[in-house]
Image (cartoon, rainbow, N blue to C red; front, side, top):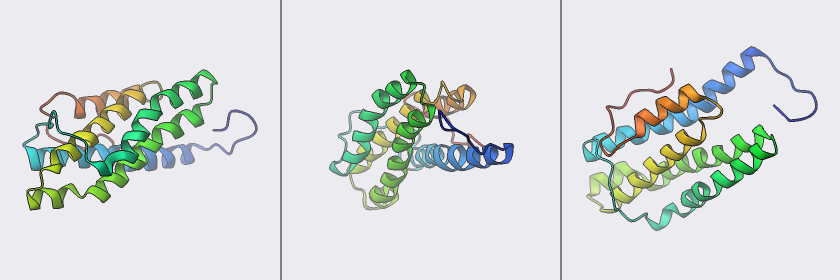
Length: 158
């Protein structure tokens, strides 16, 4: 909702938006990433792997999001705060498609560890930064992505 002015709010629009953004955006990302970590690395998050060069856009979004989110919250602009966070979600989902971890795994490409590590870090950042907005969902996302050995993937929303 905008900070000032009128807004067209209905419970149905809220449910639709929650399904699209939370389940379709964040939930899908976390489920895809944790599933790939389990499928390709036995559930163990790679540590110490160098981020591939093609992850620059995602890494930049991750670096900028916390400060942008904090500045927006300081100004009570919740829409801008979530937009900053959704930049990370969008870029992480794009990166999954660009990096194609399934193809790297099939080829035995060593870049896979870096790709998975960056994606798990992005999921963890999103989980942490969502806490002020949806604390219960944030806790479920954190549980799905915490630790070196990830729990068995299950849908966080739905």
